[in-house]
Image (tube, rainbow, N blue to C red; front, side, top):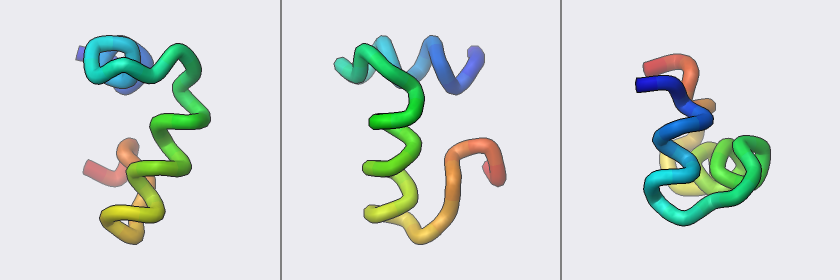
Length: 33
């Protein structure tokens, strides 16, 4: 599953918003996982 698809699945319309929230919560960008 792509990160963009995951972001949409959890309710984010834009990947960059998901990425910013993920980085704030976990201290790293989603692509590092």
